[in-house]
Length: 607
Image (cartoon, rainbow, N blue to C red):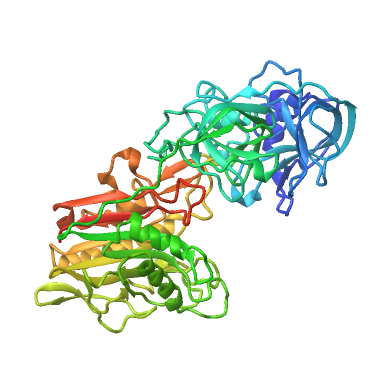
């Protein structure tokens, strides 16, 4: 067995192989005889035997995965060593359906491989595997090693160590400290049989039969039972993804706030869709305890109600129009103005040059009337084909719906996909040169991204400027469980440019009319505490009304068990100084049968 110093040296000589295999291997494979699983796992994230052939590795089969692209089985040594940093379990990748059963005692000769889920460019940690195995079943019906309990006492409050600056911030070669860092604790259990007991659900069951629980029930809890992500330093260490080794039909359809009572147990895996994952061969009973969908109150006579709602790639082929209409009429109480994000063109993802979305919008507004709502009119600007990002061919865009019985729209001709609207002065007050119009669409900040749409509305004789946004997505950012700590958020560079551009336009409005009512809203793809929002707010030109809510209620989206704020409404000083109310209306993000992955937001104020 190599010494710890030689193991670290081996880890530092690891080279990434840029291939579809997405593995890390040593440049000079060797052979090792009769090693134990904890020797293979070692005391860091990279095996000291990576790239080497090992023989007669013995263990008890604790789980079998006979489906998908990652077929194989887990084995665990029933006789552990005394080092808490070394895992006693490992995954054996077979590529075809394994011919072993839980409880088999096996001997495996194989190559030790470091597999990176999602590929080396993802930044994910690697998973130590035994590949190209020769497997011998020694006996069957053996007791499976007892599951290690993961609970609030065993998972540290600190999330991860800072990565090694000499390795671009990677934690791969650092010695594991499982009593100090949560990610080190989970890594020290990689491949082992683990369990959670009476765990609350903090991420609803998704279409891929996965959900998230917390082993720390009081960690940043909100009243719905979720776990709030309130700062970059509060990653919520108790979150753990649960998937199933059994039949999909048997997987619970859980909402945030429900519980998995009793024991949920199985091997601890690592995947690209959330990192450490308990792959359950035993799942606790589902006990419902989550919230009901919320309904916001109706606006009063003198209040203007403005909402933002990401309807997630809505196109005429979808079957969710009646549900969206019911949400807008019922749960949102028919706001006077609704900013919609992710309205697709008339044939959705068909990539044939179609950019018009009138059929999509007519189908939605007709459904709203059928649901008992107002006959909304709409205003929008068709994008240049495939120039605004999103699903290719879908041409997502922002749209204003407005109730003409309550509010009027000031139309000024000339707006199109490439023409910028400007601010002018009309009878001493700010006005738009084109309405609806786009803000600075030629700015590089909007490359392959949605351009802000601004419109001029009148409510009870008062002008209100509304800017609807859908900023650059977080796609490509390193995950919280990345090998790079802290993870890099590369996508926010473009959002910072976008926020700066929108704030500059608001400055023009307020510079022309100091007391102008400006509402800037939409899916900003960033948090209320982020630099993106700070740049939007500027020197007080705007303020995120999400911050008027208690910290535990600041969320519109649930991602990997973290309840977080991506959708927000920002307001100018004249609105902030007045009488306003704000509501994040939780109807989607916490529920497994969601019609969108975003919760709408509603602002009510008196212009």
